[in-house]
Amino acid sequence: MLKRGTAFILFLCGYCLTAAGQSVPIRYIMPGQQVKLSATSVNAPRYQWYRDGMALPGAFQQDYVTATPGKYTVEAYGGGGCISDLSDPVIIAEITGRGPDADMQINKTADNGAFKLNSTFNYYLTIANNGPADATGIVVTDKLPPQVSLELLSVPTLGTATYQPGDHTVVWKINSLQASMAASLSIKVKVIATGQITNTATVAAVEQDNALQNNQSTHQLLVLPLHIPNAITPNGDGINDVFEISGLEQYPENELIILNRWGNHVFEQKGYTQNWSGKGLNEGTYFYLLRVKDGIGRWQEFKGYITLLKP
Image 1: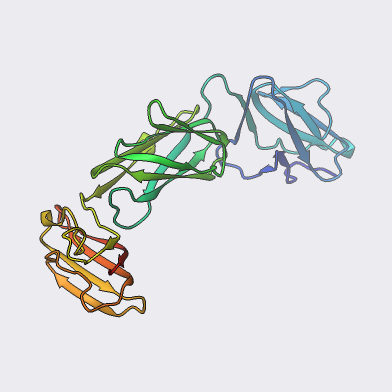
Image 2 (image 1 turned 135 degrees about the horizontal axis):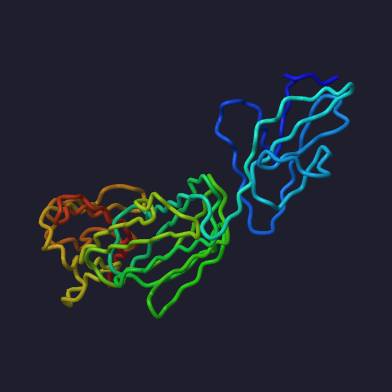
């Protein structure tokens, strides 16, 4: 038998509304979209649903389906005329234009390491919806800097990404992204010019976003104007006789280490004077580690191989 004060629960799509004094839950629907409300109580043979405090004619079942915005409550009737307390309310609100806020965030990173002319690396884009609402119509725009060319546009974890060669821009679109969810995309590029490379990507969605400070992310990379050969031929003809690194004179604080295939150091020099010719060594492949202090005081490391060819 139901008595006043009996615990009474209203369910909306899995959300349980029980605690008095809490803010009223809101469920947003599109125009014409239906939502089902469900009530549970102990041995209740009949229910009465209310919208905005008014009893709904014929709404006597445990479930009630509606497409009409309003504040809904329900009570249950038991034997002997007993009536439960009125349930906590839930609000059904219709989206007419912009819906509830969705805080979109973007983060742009790249491969670690130092890069030189004609080397390749990957940019990484990660977007997240910090909520509270789901986001729709998401567009990510990444205008690539002129110092790089696109090598490969990967398949994103959500949505589709395309490259617009006319304005050198990657456009990534996602139909929807639930609150607290994320998605990612990688872009492989080739360095075609040296200097400071600045790349900014932005994200936007249909929903209102009141935290615009995280809707764009910028990555900066300084590519030094160095040309590092991958072979030398010390035959005395004056061409490629030594391991000459073009542009190194601009960075006097540097260090060069050359190792053989077993990892043994065969040459080391701080303030490299462009003088390594592989003298006394067998021809073959050697590995170099070049450390350079750039114009803003950071050490950059370049790694690679050099082939020693002897006549």
